Length: 88
Image (cartoon, rainbow, N blue to C red; front, side):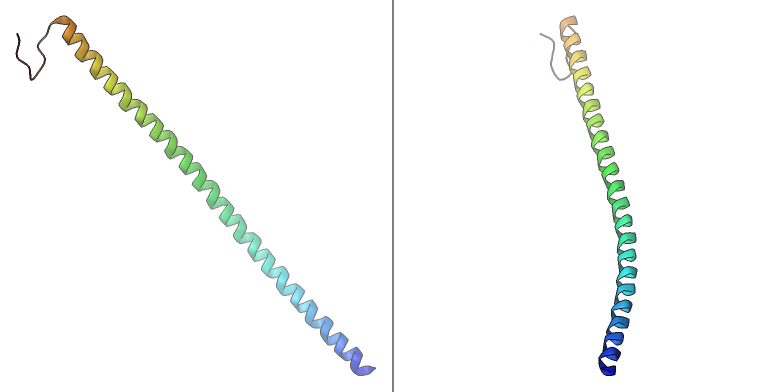
């Protein structure tokens, strides 16, 4: 009977130590999870910002092309010579 109580107390002590170790591991994992979550949030923000920058850059290029075409069209209407072509 004493031996069984001793074994039970020993097992309880072992389980108690396991619980403390697992609690420490859980806290460490929670801390790592917070770090990963913050990194993902930062990356998400950066990707959105880059996507917005790309959209604005494409819009600027499209407007530049449109302006060049309008200037070219205005020159054609005004009868100016177009570079690379001889006047008729």
